[in-house]
Length: 348
Length: 268
Image (cartoon, rainbow over all chains, first blue to last red; front, side, top):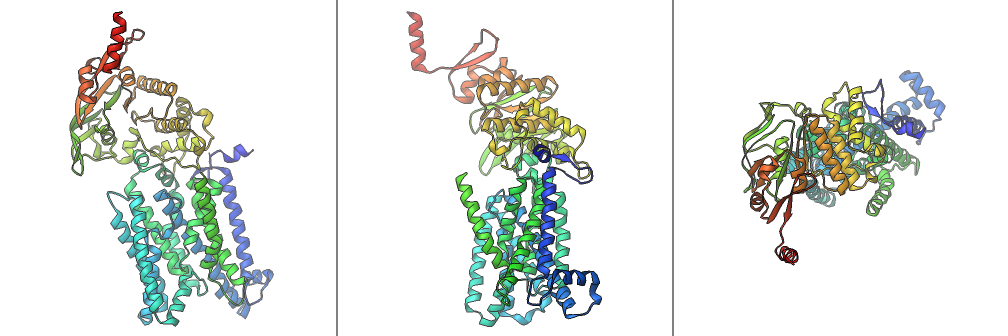
């Protein structure tokens, strides 16, 4: 029985060869995510039962009541944002780990997060009137992309050399971290506070605009990844092997790296900094499906979505009316897991 | 079919390939031999288009390498590099399945032919019993055989192997070399970097001896496997003797002290 579940086979209606058990775990995770989202709808300072939330959802937007307003304008976009942001961050992290063949790589590796953070700090602390609020995500995106391009450019040497990429990324991230600390230390206290809230990975200002923007980025850089599992499987066998199996390695690696950078930048711009999601979600997925990217890609995205949704829901539910930033809650859950992971690797 | 003309390649100041020209005989087993750092692996990588030479070109079926797309090349030439990385969470069968990559496309990912090629490769490399094991549970030798199966699954007329016998015990080394001979008999062209000179002389049809980035000698073992060439290429003093059972050539290194003792005993 278990043999039949773990033997790879072809699914006539799906574009990949895989193990039935991976399909089952993906479906199970989708159900858990839906359950979590349903529970999350009922959490908050405005009381709402699941039945009421359900009625509102089915009734559509016509029911203009305080309840409908809370559901449609506050909770639903926030839940969607958590799911999309988590999925984007997890995919970005998975790509980075597979491309560098380093299990400890995180989406921030090429400096996207640091670049976006410093850009946001500069805007929020030094010159808040420079940009309208709606353009903040775009500014973070541009800042993150600029730093990523710089890091990749510095480490490019007839293709991407993973180790150089890591070292250059670490160096530049440290430098940007110092700049961020300077701004936080010497900036106007009120402005710094609002910037820090944003940097903590908080979803409290989430609206439909951000949901749309993140959906768009996931469609561009996330969805196509589902079809790149064979390339990623091959890449992890070593560049020489991939090249002689007919994969155009520099081109594919560059493209996948670009996807990772776009996803990270979009996630950071819309939901703030959540490094641990990108680091931990792929590892959770690996516990279920090993290094098979056909399953690893959807499972990582699902775990990422689940983690951020869990973090945000807990952040809202634990100490109302105080809202803990989801990024911090995730880090508090994620850090111990990272330590366990490191300890287990040492034992190997 | 595979031909190289006047290849030149340097890494920084170091000349790794210096005016290398050779014609690999089709449907034969060619062994590349030479001292450490003489450019064997580099030559193999250039033949597989892992590296681009600074001048000179490689012709495959009379057409320059560069005119093939990566995928088209991968349907004709397979390379097993010396260094590979084996992901822990993957089974042997799944590793071997990846050898089919050049034959697949976005819309056609797995056909009956892929299945047959993988089954056959598993049998040829003698890893059928291991096929459901995770790669992380295998020994170095077992892993090496799985990689060979993966290379065979690619089903190419030309197969390049960089020190394929590394990590294998002596029985599996011989089994692998016999397998390469069997593949040659099916009409495939085999090119392997080999360390063991006696194995190279015994199994290969064609020897290419490299010395400091240049081809020192090439030809059938009977012509080029001589003590003068071994002295020039490896700086090794050796006799070449003939195995009384098989008629194969064997090189026997001479160590001055012991040779004297043996002669002395024989004299008694």
